[in-house]
Every structure is written in structure tokens, then in C-alpha cells.
Length: 102
Image 1 (cartoon, rainbow, N blue to C red):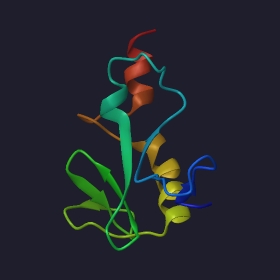
Image 2: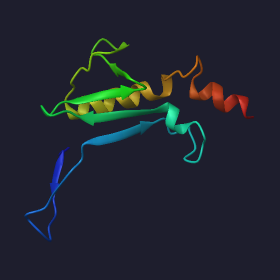
Image 3: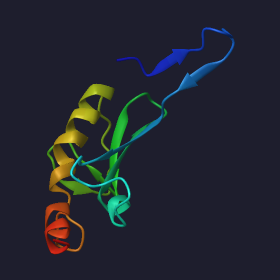
């Protein structure tokens, strides 16, 4: 997958994807808590990508902390997709939140 794509109509313009939002597909798009359960995958200046959530970064060891670990693009997206269903906010997963609404 490419991080940069050129516009065909103007070769002097480049569009760069620098950030992705990753959220479990179980969360409806209009759910009031969706933003709380959304991970950010963001490109750093060195071309690596971090996985960020609520002031913490996912480390290579799978633990959250203050140190930003740089992953390659595909690994960062894959890890974020794996992590999204397991995010906890105030001790609850999105599954817990949705079950309370039923």
C-alpha cells in the first residue's frame, strides 16, 4: 500500500495520507461514544507510524504507554485493527457499552 498518491490531473500536487482513524465495525457511525473508542494511526516525520489513543501509544510489546513506537505502515494498521475491539474506556469495552443500551 502506498502512503502517497499523485493526482492525475496535476502532477505538481501530491496528496499524502498522514492519519487514519481505526474503530471497531460494531460501533454505529452515529454512536455518541464512538470517538472514545477510536484509535489514531499517525505518520511521523521519519516515515514510521504510531498508534495513539487518549494520550498513550501502543508499544511493540502490545502495552500502552507514553513512548511512541514507530511501526511500518501496514503493521501499524494491522495492529490498530487487532487492538480496536479490545479498547477499554473507564473499564468498559465498546461491547459492554452497547450491551447496556439493549
